[in-house]
Every structure is written in C-alpha cells, then in structure tokens.
Length: 217
Image 1 (tube, rainbow, N blue to C red):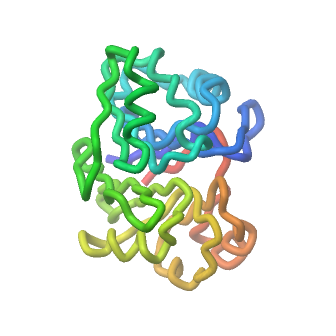
Image 2: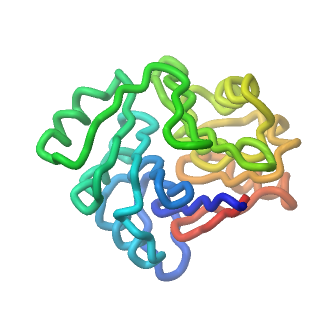
C-alpha cells in the first residue's frame, strides 16, 4: 500500500493553492509535519485538497522557527491531537497550546515512534531539529523542515535504521549533492538554496515541490 506525502504549505504553490514562507507536509492522513508560518494558507490548502482535519492525530514540529510553528493554531480545528516538540522550544509551544484541551504537547528527546511506521529522529545538531522518518515497502522516506543539522547528518542518522528511499523538505544551504545520487525520490522544498541544481542534476528522481504537490511511495 502506497504512502501519500501531501505538501500543504510551501514558499511556492501550484495553481489554485496559497503559498507562504514555510513548510508543512501531511503524511498519510494522520501525521502533520510542521505547520508553515500562517494557519490561513494551511487551512485553505487542506480544505482545497479535501483533507479530513479530524483524522489528524499528531503534529510534529521540526524546530522552533515561526515559519514551521506559525500555523500551530490549526489545532482548534482538529480533534484530539498530540504535538511533538523538542526541549529547545517545548515551553513556548506548551504555553501557546495551554488553552486547547484537545492538544497534548509531547517532549521528544531521542528517536521516537510517532505513529505506526512513522518516527522522529529526535533532536539533531546544535540548533536542535527533528526530521520525520516514514517506513515504506521501498525504504525510508525522510521529511525535513530546514535541515539545519545538515542533510548528510540527518541521512547518516536514518541510515543506522535502514535504507533511505527518498527525501522531501527543506535542505537549506546543502551543497553535497552527490549524496543524493542513490535516492529514488528527491523533493527540494521551502528554504533549499540549490533547488534548480538538484532538479537539473537528478531529472529522473527529483520532483518540484510546491503547495498542493502530492508524492506517493
């Protein structure tokens, strides 16, 4: 059975969708990774895609920057949900969500299962950022926020647990493009500085990323 990765917030957007500086990706129908910078485009795009908001059971926040946490107010439109945050920004997120009885904020200190077949890397790098690791029959798909720890550091961590099939998300200033060579899905999103170079170098395996894009593995 294929797993669907739906980009619901990005700097770029497909026709008919809203864009904004930030990133958010829905994995399957239950796990939302990051919330973009503003709940309005996030909600608009999700509604346009026909996403069932009450099916979402978990929100994983990669790091504390506003372009990834700014849409967290979406919880008021959800059912019971767990929000997974790192120590570095746990307190402000917990304070922000204190009035939402449907939201439980969970502290992530290391590799942690979020849902069946979906895990967090736990905090990596000096800035403390977590990425999402999704099991598929073809291997792991890694979903990144900004990759502040570095794409090589994130991939090294995931390789300890199994083969990486693909990577989706923000790659920031990542320049060692050769390490993507053996991946079958490469979707550079959000803050990736070398998007065009990646797409040109790997035309068979890379995919443009924008709000409204869907990748199935």
